Image 1 (cartoon, rainbow, N blue to C red):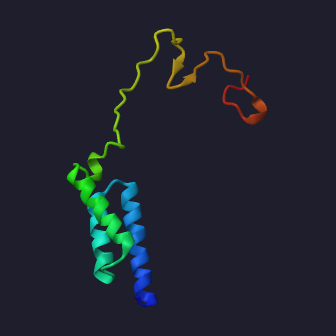
Image 2 (image 1 turned 90 degrees about the horizontal axis):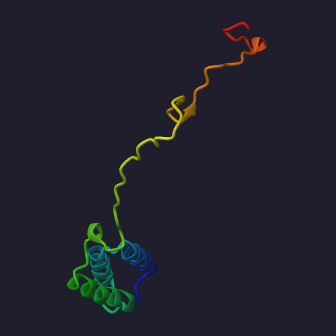
Amino acid sequence: MPSERVQRRIDSLLDQADAAIDRSDWRAVQEMSAAVLSFDAENEDALALQRAAESAIAAGGGDPSVSSQSTVMEVAPSAAPSDMPASYADGRYLSSQTKCNTSLGCCHGT
């Protein structure tokens, strides 16, 4: 049975392998499980992760950048609608008649 310190290291490596599975990074899973097995050659979790990683890599997995779960979609900016009023600019409505409030120090003074 591994010491407490080594067991913490094993647990940390297994946690990292779990995170790699979430990213579909099977090469990292393989590396983490191999590291666990270097501490404890009979660790059942590491052996199971090693088999899963080998299977996924053989099936064409392993590179998280080509994961089937991630999709990049580019969206072209939409053109301004033709029915938008001419006094509409940059998402704001421009008014030609501005009511001023002189108590707030308006520059128009009306």
